[in-house]
Image (cartoon, rainbow, N blue to C red; front, side, top):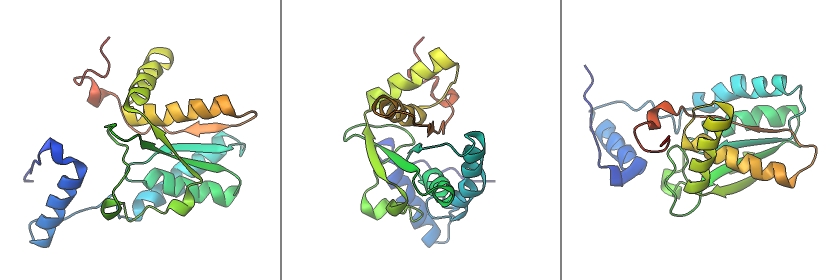
Length: 188
């Protein structure tokens, strides 16, 4: 019974959000709002963070996450920092001109309400080419079919691993690759 409202691709996520808000304001719909819903980061504070802490036996030194809605990085950061404030939280955003699905560098008026930059120790930029090359490598070498936002986070994590010694770096595979099979991302 739902009505699907499409917006032009060149308007991006911002136009889609504007249309949804206009429709809500006109009484034509409801927004569950993953960008402002505190349950988004809370799920990662209660689930992702404790899982990482447990699976690394508390030895994690760096957490690397792409920034889309920012729920993953906000909630996981809150939990990990409560266990060890020295853990470095690294947010990944696209380089200017890069179009990486799932990763955004939000304009201030669109910044998710759940985002709190004080929970992030450093921001790293990743190019579209790096994200795509890394996600193809992840599929080829590890058999993990993920999307480009996962490739972006992993590219940054791999760069960090070249700069650090005795670090335990965790990167999140935050999207599935099957939705990109028809896009040319995986040509072989």
